[in-house]
Image 1 (spheres, one colour):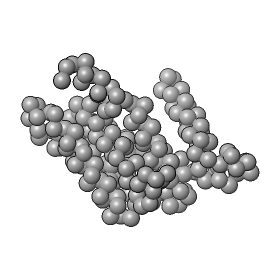
Image 2 (image 1 turned 45 degrees about the vertical axis):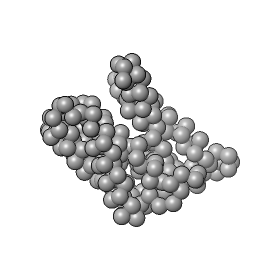
Image 3 (image 1 turned 30 degrees about the horizontal axis):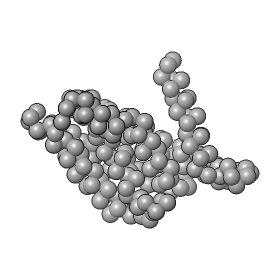
Length: 183
């Protein structure tokens, strides 16, 4: 494969941060419900992500550098393991617009492992980054549930009680986070 072809494919999927972030938010939007239920569901989700990130990092670290092309296979296997654990815990049931919910979990589970691998962290750095990902993900998971619950109970017209309103609210939150980074 030529260098330009590899660059194109990497930019299209694995290094496309817009796609990775959208898949994580989409999963959280679909899986969030009431705040009480989401608090427990979020703990299950983030603990699974935490463990598979560590497992993926260890397996990646033990591979000789000549076997780096196997990393996606390792991350896919750990992602399948994470989805299996979540399904065992009773999560990821049902469908969303005809798509099984477990398909939605693949993006964020796989994506966080890729982000950690791209950082080329030593153990202490990986644990710090992984913990930050998990805490931020949990806060966002519960925050999305709170926004979703507020939209549902509001006096707004039914047209505003949809995923598009939730996406707009999340976009405003994202702008706020970007503003904090600038400061």
